[in-house]
Amino acid sequence: MSHPKSDTCDITLLLEGTFPYVSGGVSSWVNQIIRAYPEYRFGLIFLGSRREDYSKFRYELPENVVHFEEHFLYDGLNDNNRPKGHEGDPEAFKIVNDLHLSFKADNADVALQSFRKIASQMLPKGKLTADDFLRSRMAWDLICQRYNESCNDPSFVDYFWTVRMMHAPLWKLASIVSTAPKSRVFHTISTGYAGFLGALLKNTLGTPLILSEHGIYTKERKIDLFKSEWIKDSRNLFQRDSSELSYFRQMWIRFFEWLGRFCYDASDQIIALYEQNRLRQVADGASDERSFNIPNGINLPRFAPLRDQRPEDDPPLVLCLIGRVVPIKDIKTFIRAMRYVANRLPTAEGWIAGPEDEDPAYAEECKALVISLGLQENIKFLGFQRVDALMPKIGLTILSSISEALPLVILEGYAAGVPTVSTEVGSCRQLVEGLTDEDKAIGPSGAIVDIADPEALANASLDLLTNKARWKAASNAAIARVERFYDDRIMFGSYKKVYETALAQSSES
Image (cartoon, rainbow, N blue to C red; front, side, top):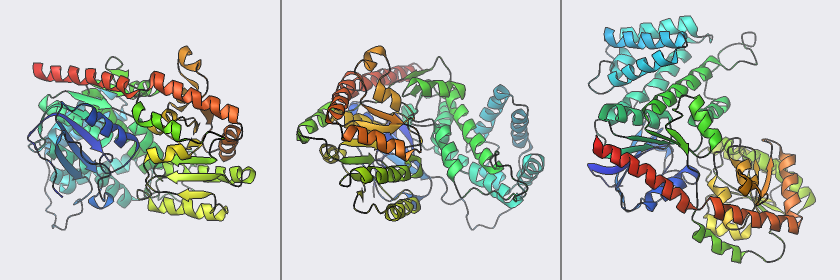
């Protein structure tokens, strides 16, 4: 498959595990942003795990995308070449050792200085090469030293391979700096590996860097790491403390925290969706002066006509969860909630509309749970669906997630007149109950419940679906709230200023 290529771009987006291969959420937002500014020539640098994890594009590339390239960070890490050992560069490993000493002393400022030095030496002409990291005597000695000093897990083999898997992709990212298209602005849509690349580009080329975080990357990775079964814990029953994370999970968390801090340090403009997330960014190392909020918005003319397609009588007895079938969406809580709902409303249906290929094992567990609860007649797995086709047929959008930012699906439902029942994550309480006095005066546009509480989720849904007046009031509030505060024209105007500021900065440099 051929992709557009160009040596120059106005704005290059750095995309980790999202558009154009993954649908919904952040990807929808990226698609919106690119299409909103046809006057800009966009480049896209996609970062994924392995080629096999991404089958096909979920979105067509807009016409103003003039460059697309993709890199798979874990492909080729275990090559079959016979390794050739060597000593390594003493100067480079002194910087590495200084970094670890600053970590040990808990000195963030000194550690950040060392982090910048190391990152610059990882570039193609730097002193700290990937070959040094993978095969040098100095790297081996340093890994052994760190294991003996710090690791409380008895398996050195697991420690060794964790260190390699964690750090090796950084050299792939460093190699992109010299081949990336010349861009007037770089815009990373997360911290993490994409943010590391963005910081390298900014520090090496001097090109302005914008960071937009929908969710807080480090927080979401922590949730993933808590649940991950591939992270080893070799301690026996007597060595483990139930209140303590395994050492390898702590390693990954600290690693992503420092990738985030490195990106925050380099970013000229740091954007959050709402104030709680902005404060979390600041607590994690972002500059208070360079950070601000731009809420998501949606295309109201696209969804408003769907209101007239809705039945005029009682709301449809359909609860619809629109999202990827992955653990962070906590699909199982929704399924369990549907058991309570079906006990009172046997004809009610729960629709799960989203791709199942990101975590097939979890999707199978969800389907097995449906069978075990006897809900085969009530729950439907629809796969990926166009939101426009769903909205006239449903009574509620449901979010049972354990982590969200500012979910577009709630706003899309609102524009179509569909209230929501959501867990209290991200900005969802703000979306349901309002933020300012003016916003709160509109009234609730649904209900908020605790995480992982299927009975509460069911009861809140039933309270709306079985009371036409209450459902209608929530529907009217939803329409009023999205029209007043979440029109995408407001968002596009804000990002237009962001881009104009960055482009002007680029022209001056």
